[in-house]
Length: 425
Image 1: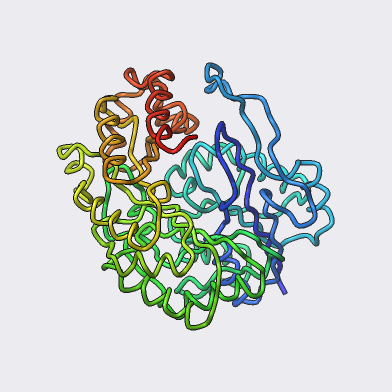
Image 2: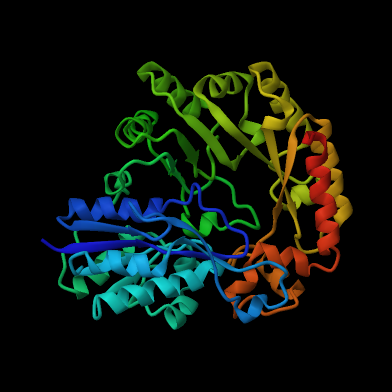
């Protein structure tokens, strides 16, 4: 029986957090490989069972030499990871996932460690960075194969070339959560793609269509995470949780209530304000939603139209009223505002902050990160003082907004203070 090693690499970053960072796509591919007859090992370098994980400060890349933040590796220590890998059987295949383009140094380190412990083992690289910047990934990571787009569609050719079983299911199966033990926190993703095509977002590039598992199937996975893995906090990764209105999420929450499944939910990705209803607010409160986030993006009508005309202040006011009636306090209703967009000025962001506060919500600033292939990418490349196309480290939102001529560090801090002031004390 062939054996596959699944690897979730370290995160190298200036500011990232990893509480809900789980490799859902990799785990789904793992389920598909298991169905095809593979034995699986999971090396999640952010969290390996029985090994301490945390932050290790590491030397900054040259691209970040002038940034006044320390650079760090998130996850287990390399020597502990090396010992863990050395204790495992040699794999016939290694699959490494990727997320942010500017996290690629952690990918390079992970691939290098795997090749050190298992010389000659074939390594396939997939995920977001591999799809958005395949040429860069081929040049720097050391992987033997770059899976662009849907991993289940891309992998069979590579498996065939290795003489390994390649008959994978066409529909992505649920993640192989059984590869983990106890999981106090976890993440779920039930919809792939998005019905919108926002100019700053890569969702359509990664998943051109939109598909979603049924509410009953989704409830099965949540129940399994709660009952079999002791999960108490679950984050939704869906880009379009309210696609088609509130019906799907209402049906899911009603099914979980019927089964008496209790867990704290976190809607960390921006929900669409136009699809939100008072009945959904009530259901979310009953179901235990602790983190509620919406995408307002801007309070400027002209900017909003350019970004897809997804929400207006009237939509936010209606949503806030429904959430208040359900028992949420203003500080529990979060809205994301974009900052650092090409051509944007601080006055626009400040107006958005004040409008969100006036509507009874808590604003959160989301610093823009340029994404290759999106509609805003050419503007970002033209406006940036460094070569975005050649060096993905420059995509980091921490330095993009700071490099904006109008968003100086002091100005950014002033805007952040405005978002926090009403909720302090």
